[in-house]
Image (cartoon, rainbow, N blue to C red; front, side, top):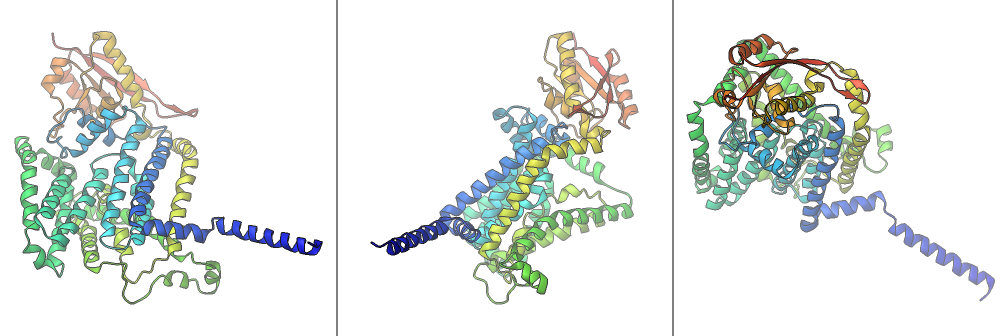
Length: 550
């Protein structure tokens, strides 16, 4: 072979090898096609969603560990842990499911801050998977996974989801109820009605606030064009009977405690000023719209990022967002099921604010935590919206970039937050330190387990969580007590009473201690947290140690 032919052969071989490597090299289009194919495949799609939800839960658990490193766990988390120490049919303020799950969780995991964040994220991860199952009944698999990523970008499922409580748990039980409803409306069988009733009871055992969602589902069933087919079937009636039967033990408990959860709601959340109610309702609406803006805006960006998007941005910016919309039929959307989602979401979006104005109640922004998980699906189910494969990749890449950037920045954010708010007693007060000191003080004096702590919820519940003895909390003057202990038991077993000198309720606390801890040993303890060399607030506590009865 001549040198010329040899050179040509080598050149051709080199070119072919380079082309082969180029075909194997991952590109954005190849990755987008792979992701869309996985999301669209029945078997691979399930594993994709499970893996995504697990990765989201694990990454955000580490993020929250870093972000909250300078703080003790939130009072709501400590309260749920306290409930879980004694399985009851109710805990004064709320039904029992949140406490039961916390109790089971901490039989497996240690009582540590990181385990509470893992519990919250595991709960939200389950909610994401159930929401995907809902989406599969409404849209095609590609759109369903797009909904999943939108939920992961919704602050309720990341930053705002740090504290496990009944509100967060509703993001499991309410999606289960919606899923059971869609199934029952479609199948209209006795078994589907049974599952709907069980799901409704599970939701009610989480928090009575779920009545808003139950009402929305009822309206959706009455408004839907196929309502007569559903109402003439055994499904809705079997659901109602099942729900009532399953709830009987809790209803008996509710009667036995003289309906204290309703007393709690009336005392804490009733207002006398309509103007104040209006202000709170507007704040509720603004807060939840701001939270929803994040996933909606990021989804819009993902839809707009088409090939050569920068050229369209210069020539016709509006085309970036209008190109995803087109008329005509859309086989990727089940209009009959989508109608349920639209009705339910509209009702739970409008109903509570109107109810808050009408009944003049204190509308907490956190009440919206459980009500808007259907919003991404309601938007993606609009038939005129066209979803390209590349959009799925772009939104997933946005989620990954935001998550990893937050993970890297989280230690610095925690330090900066403490520097910016050094006197935040609620966030940075060293209650865990106080719990350890009081446990040691009790053991030194009595050589027994510290059984009861008496103090406000904000201080008593953290003592229950952080003390190795996990004393039962008793809140003086609270008529909706959790039922974990009583004043009589506190006096029999002995207790430690705590008054926070920075709390405006200090005179009330001192008066109660004077009446019920007359012979107590009194101490003054000051605690202060230091984080990366930065001091937190120094808090002085008035301590009353009451020995066990002889």
